[in-house]
Length: 208
Image: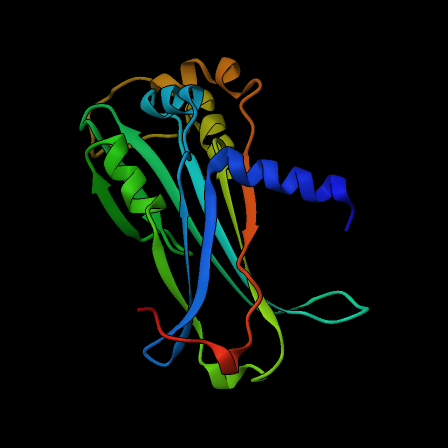
């Protein structure tokens, strides 16, 4: 891996403040801890509060180190959360899971940050699922995407007059759609990638 690529990855991780803690064994499972310190920029915060949706994705991988060859991905875990601010309710709705049926509501940007980006410990695999003395590490990638393909479909529906909700009063076109061209210009994904120190399953210790 080139030095330039390593520098680029480090810069991306520092931009979001993504950190990956040591890998530990907790209650019979190999776990990893991670957190994101600075997920929002002023512009992203402004667009969120105007009602533009964003999607937050975490991708966690367990890799086996291999000499003279590419490292091998042995486990991949992905979680996705769609965030939408409801100005009329003054609250953020977070839809999680593959079908986004798991919905939570939080009142402020700080509580949203705590919900999605505070330090968490994720159980990965049982030690017996890995080779005891092989060397492994855990990678974590976080992506904050201000607008997804699904969101663009919603924009088209609104502009074509197809999006209707007879169960609620008419509110007109949402604010984020009125300024969508201005908001999307230059507002790209924020992403970071970081990884844990290498570990051997046979030498893992429980946290103190």
